[in-house]
Length: 443
Ligand code: PFF
Image (tube, rainbow, N blue to C red; front, side, top):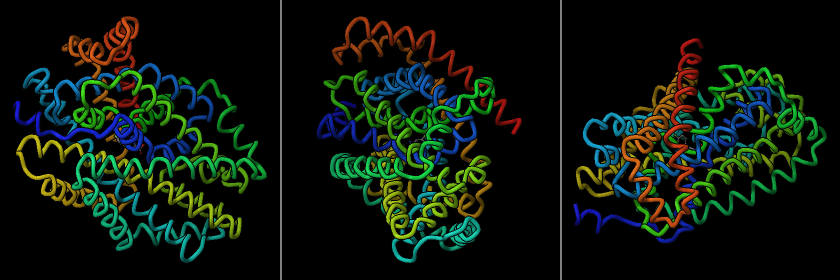
């Protein structure tokens, strides 16, 4: 044991860890998920509910996952057992199947993203929604799907097998600043579109109170929060297992959650003006993830050369956001294989990638299946979040206390988080979980 923790890799710097966690959190979920869920859930009602979930559920669970990872110094699949014994192995198992399931279709969607990126770069954009629909059919039918999926998985293999410092940390240090610059540029550009004001109104100010009681909106807010923050799946446990004792976990949880939420909002400030300027609100309101691959290109396609340039930047940005997330999903099984079987990182990464490719074949063949796997996986994340908060709040509360003390947290912060993780967060997540399961089965 001792030898294993001495050999275990560590982040090079605090900033490296934060950027890697932000890189995991900021992904396709912010760019696609936030926009389509908020257009389904009545705009501002969804956004408010989402922010409430991030504050009351997300941040405490971040701290819980960080504490579990740093205290056990082992991968998320093994951490619950190491912390609380064999009866918690089911949670470890959940942390194995959820990332594999999500990575399987995530790589497929990344393939579409890369495809539209190259399409905008080399060929140009479709000019009408029906042309864009035809293009998307071409992209997600047959071989093109697989090319994009394999390309993304090979890239991820290359990075993850490079290790924590030289692979994951290095990539995030390069990609995150680029991502923020492009994002800011696009928000400014979108603000000058003809109907930007109407887009903002629908996104942020169209407050339909009845939506707050709609089970689908509640499920969307919980799913989006867990998915977007990369919580309930073991990523933050795994990333924190490479941390040293000096980091202030609470502060970092707040920083990561704020940056991720800011990116979600900024993405909405780009997509909503585009949608309303080009009259695409009908297409989007019944949307699935796939619709965004039709809506955005056809909107930008009406805008000539500038539209094309924006599409290149937007889909390039989406791809950067996605690769830093995909590697975090892959790192969970990889670190579990390394910790459990003491195999080389290269080999662990190779096995994981091949497995994810095979698992992703159904999603590459059918967008309906992809949607179903996504819906189920999202509920698994909420379940994971509930179990982690219960574990830390009720079963091993001393771990939380010790980790927060090590972090230099004040007594007030410690007591606040202990209270939340015991009495508030698990109860709210249980409520969200029940509503989500009900809504999923109904749908
Ligand atoms: N958080 C990333 C996104 O929003 O796209 C990726 C992701 C990580 C999704 C972990 C889901 C998840 F469980």
